[in-house]
Image (cartoon, rainbow, N blue to C red):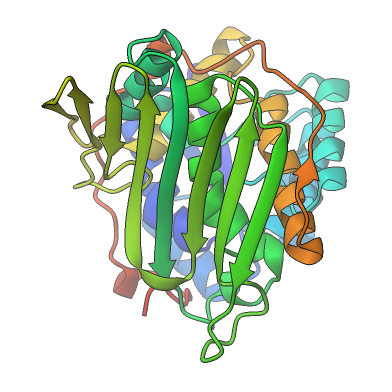
Length: 367
C-alpha cells in the first residue's frame, strides 16, 4: 500500500470546505468514499470527486468492503463514538475530529476500541502540524521565553442559530468547538496539564442557542501558572493569544484558523524590542492527513493519539460542571510523556477551498 484510502464520514461544512479539497495535496492519501444521509450530497460530491457514496445505513458494509483503509469522522460531536468505535473494531484506522466525543465515557470507549484492535487513531489537531504553532510550542517548552507564567486567549465568531452547532447543547457549543483550540495550545505551550478549572457563561437573550453562547474559562496549572480564554458564538470574529514568560512575551494572531490566506503570525517582545515571526499559509487539513497516513504506512503511533484527546476532554467536562455548579472543579494531576515535536511541522501548499455559497446542503456557520 502506497496510499491510504479514506472515507469521509459526514458531509458537512468542514468536510466539504477543508478536508476533501485538502487531501488532494497529499502524496500518501486518497479520497475513496463518502458516508452521508443526504442524497443530494451523495450525488454531487461523489461526482465531483469521482468516489462512491454510501448511506449511513450501509456503514458496516463499507467497513467490511475492503475499499477503504481509514475513515475521517466529521459528524456532529455526539455521533463520534457511533462511527469511530465500529471502525476501530473492524481494524479501520480513524482520523477523528475534535473534540473526541460529547462525553468522557464515549471518548474512553473510543480509546478502548483502539487499544483492543491495534488500528491507528489520531485526533485531528491540525495545528500540531502548522509550522508557526509548532515553532511556538517547541520554543516555549525549551525555555526560549523564560519561565512561563500566564496565557490568555480569545477565539470567537458569530454563528447562525440554524446551523447544527447552534442547537446541540454544551457539547455542540463554543467551548468544545472553539475553546478546544486555546485549551490545546496552552497545554502544549506549558507542556503541562491543568489542575483546576473555573468557568463563567452568559447568553444573549436575543439569540436562540440552547447553551451559554459566551464562556470565560480560567485554568490553574502546576508551578503557579495560570491561563484564561474566552470562546463565543455570539460576537464578532477574533482569534489571538498572549503568552507571558520571564524573558519574553509573545502575541499570536492569527493563530487558530485555517484557509489558503491564513498566515500564522506571532510577535515576540523582549527587553522592549519586538520581532515579528510570520509564516506562509499551508494546507492544514492536508498536513494532518499526510502525517497520519505516514503513521499508518510506517506503523508509527501518532502524537495526537487518544491520550492527547482525553486530556482535553477531561477539561471540557470540567468546564461543563463548573458552568452548572458555579464552583471551581479540581482535576487529578496528570502528564503526557509525548508532546508536539519540531519534525511534525509540514508545508503542503494550500488547496483551493469552496466558498460557503458553494457548499451543498449546508447551512453556513456565519450569517
